[in-house]
Length: 134
Image (cartoon, rainbow, N blue to C red; front, side, top):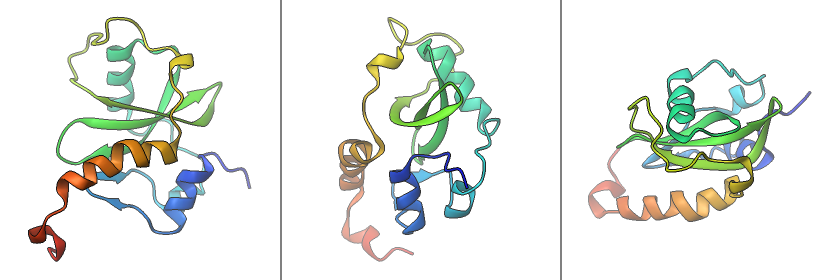
């Protein structure tokens, strides 16, 4: 079986480590084993391309629940790579960056994204009230 998604992401999904409030993953352990649906989440991929002018494609794998922040894996030559871009999308249908985003500028992998982006956001949400809120 060919593994299409990066190993660290699949590992977290397989271990059930998916509840990272305020972030949530788009895939499940089951969907991570299937061929990726590149047509899914086209609205976010289109906005990403328009707003960044990127010279690569993307695969949406996570979204922040309280605002339009998205995390994408880089797709190069049809292959999903362990390179993550996190961006707040405005859906303004125009480029928001002063210069186009280039493949060479992206170096953060999935586990670094968890450490550097997600854990900072999780820390902001930690509260006594939320501790046992089911």
